[in-house]
Length: 388
Image (cartoon, rainbow, N blue to C red; front, side):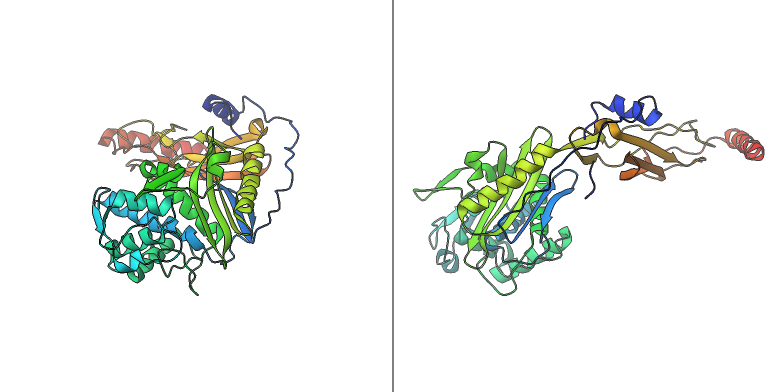
């Protein structure tokens, strides 16, 4: 596992980069072995950096039970974002949705139910009836909707996931993995943050029936704000959970435990381990100017360089001052330059181990200079190369 901690400020990172602040002689961080869980499969990731902190059988294909509804809800959220449906739209309940076995939000055949209520019924009450109702409305049939679910999974990089229905009821080729489900959870959190708060709601009342969210961690840990439980005899008891403390968000996936209490307890072990021994840092943001080297033959004499996206890293606590940053920038940069054009590499290391690498790109467009400027710079470059 790649291990990285937060430098106190960007100024400190710059001083380290310039060599003004030497690397600390602090001893290596002492991190115990991760907990071993009573589960068939599990994983713990940092949501921002994507770093895997703990995993066991994370790529084992297993029945996903109602964890399926994470993708069902994601597709509803996608349709809302595209403007194809609105939360206020009414969906008419079919006989198939009404008769769906298992967990329910208790909608009735012929009722017209809002997308917003159905989404809550899927996420909070784990309603199979609500899942089928939205599947039929969006894709025409549950089978067609399941095909869309699998396509979205592949697009996200969920290589070991297949869907045959919108509910998670057992089917031979309906499965996922802990790693894939952590990927999906991250998409739910980041792609539609305005809808994510639904996953933290403890209760939802529909048709006069008040039902609790089955995620026990919502009552036990104030930092936990999602996501979804699942259970069938085949899958056992499963839980995808996410928690945020300070600037750090973790996602845990636990599959195949023996009880509701066990899935909550084992998830707590993962989250406690991650928050206790690691933290998330963002040493550089997209658009930060990391260097302004000479620009030859340009309308400007310098070009601003940085990284394209925010850089997040997960590091063990207590190791900040042991990090070093290094820029490897092209010796000669000539105009014209297009924004996003690559001109080097940023490396962040702990001792001799490179922990993160990002391309150094132009942060602006710069056109060629006038004829005299181009000729003058060509002469200077010629003699510079000659002397070298």
